[in-house]
Length: 405
Image: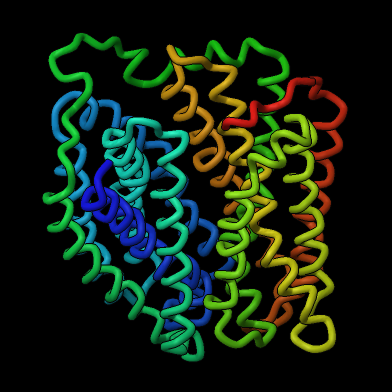
């Protein structure tokens, strides 16, 4: 892969995740503290649009991108249409109108996560060695979005957070045009006869016949319930307890994720799959315990440590899980199996989690704009602990992940 293509692919990753991160992190604060004045349950529904988009995304990629059109052209069209929806979102003042547009937008955006991966890997001769160097720019794009929000101090006036949608709309429009100049990625199954089961990824269900993988699969869905509490409620929590530039401070989590991503091969050699997955689960228990008892005074270190644990929370469970899935599925159903675990976690699991989180937040309201966060965070803490215990008992896999992964 030459330097020009590497720069294009890295820029693609950076911008795609910047477009998402610039509004997604602070949306909970905007909805609850801004002009829309949404409830916790409504905020959960809003974040749940990501999950509905993740469920629908495989059909868009499988039925359209794989058979009919080049991936970079689909990516460009999705972002250009998305820019219009993002602009309209910045103008809405009622939850119903906001939610409808947001759902439409996330149905269009979630397929872009698979498309940027496809475009990148199509240009690589050794994806295991090259992909991480390109994908890390997506994390850097997310970090940059948080730093921009912090630098502009938009969170200090929640009504102004609609600017994040406006900024995202402009960047999305320009990026959509840029996509047409990305390396050509033709549809891999053009002209081929593909069964409905293959298109929908149903052939991947065979991997669930392995009892250990089935335990992992169920645990993955369940652990995404407490995971959703962080994505949906953390920024609102941090702003409510008075942490300045909360979105910028939250990028510590992505910085941690980047560091641990590069250290993962060392952990793969030392620990087995079961230990790696358990460490990831237990990190969620510790994180929520720190949030439950942390504050912006003497215990502010607990808040920062809870944010920094994101690297372990995400990499040890989800990255390990993706590699474990790859090993269990084999080459014949590799893509379908990855799509299945993504649908199960970011689709089903997190949708349930966002709904539950919204209900828990509403139940612990202590007045207008004030919540009993200690009780809110204890719930996902105990939930994650229960899942970790059941996983420890029923998951019997003994093998280790190969170091070259």
